[in-house]
Amino acid sequence: MMKRIAVMLLAGVLIAAGLNWFLVPANVFSVGVNGISQLMSSTLFSLTGISVNTGILIFLLNVPIAILGWIKLGRSATIYSLLTVVCVSVMAILIPIEHVTNNPLMSAIAGGVLTGLATGLTMKYGFSTGGMDIVSLVLAKTTGRTVGSLMFAINILIVIAAGFLFSWEAALYTMISIYCTTQVLDTVHTSHQKVTAFIMTSKPNETIKSIQSELIRGMTILPGTGAYSKKEVSMLMIVVTRYELYTLEQCVYAVDEDAFINIMPTQTVMGKFWNEDEQKKIREELKKV
Image (cartoon, rainbow, N blue to C red; front, side):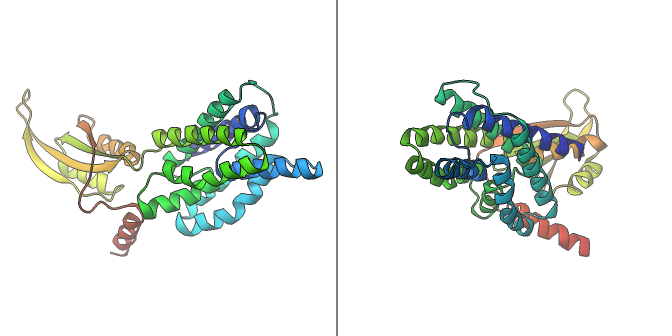
C-alpha cells in the first residue's frame, strides 16, 4: 500500500510537470482525458476568454470513466486510479505553468516521456492514471493487444481535433508526444510480455505452495542434481508475465533463500495461458471450495 501511495504521488507530480512545464506552454496536447481537458480549456479560453484550469476538467471527465473501471477492473484498481486522478488534478493546479524550453519538439518529447513514465508506473502496480488508461486496460484484456498500441489508436482523435481547432503543426507535435508516451508506457508496463522462469530449489513443495497462493499459473517439476554440491534439487518451470515476475520472486525467496532462478524471454505461448479475468474466476472458485 505504501508503494502504491508513493507511486500515486509521483505519478501526479510527473503528469502535472509534463503538462504545465512542457505540453501546455507549447500548445502540444497530452494523451487521453488530459489531452481532451487541454483542448477544452484552450478552446473555451479562445472563444469566451474564460480560463478553466486543466486539473479541474481532468477530474470532472474522469468521473464517468471511473464507473466503467469499477465494473470491469474491480474496486481496488478503480479507487487507486481515482486517487491518482485527484493527485494529478491537485498537482496541475499547484504547479505553475512555465516555459522550460521554447522548442516545441523538445516540449513534445519531454512531456510525452513524463506522461508515459507516470502511466506505466501506475499500471505496473495494478492501477492507472484514470481516463483513457482505464478504457485501454479494459480493451487490452479483451483483445490481447498492448496498452500502448491501443492508447495510440484511441488518441488519434486528439491529434485530428488539435489539427482542426489549432494548427496541423500542433497536431504533428501532439502525435510525437503521444508516440513517446506509448513507447515509454509499453517499456515500463510489461504485462503483455511473457517470460519463462526456471527455479532450482531444494524445497519444491513449499515453493509451489507459496507461488500458488499468489499466482494462478501452471508449473512443471523437473528432477535435477547440483553439479557442484551433488545434491538432489527440483527444477520448477513456469511461464508468467513480466508484471507477475516480481510476485514470483517474492514467493520463491519467502520460503527458500538459496533458490536459483533463471529468467528467459518467451517469444510465443501456445495453449492455455490464463488472463487476469480468468485468474479472477479461478480464485473465486477456489474460495468456494
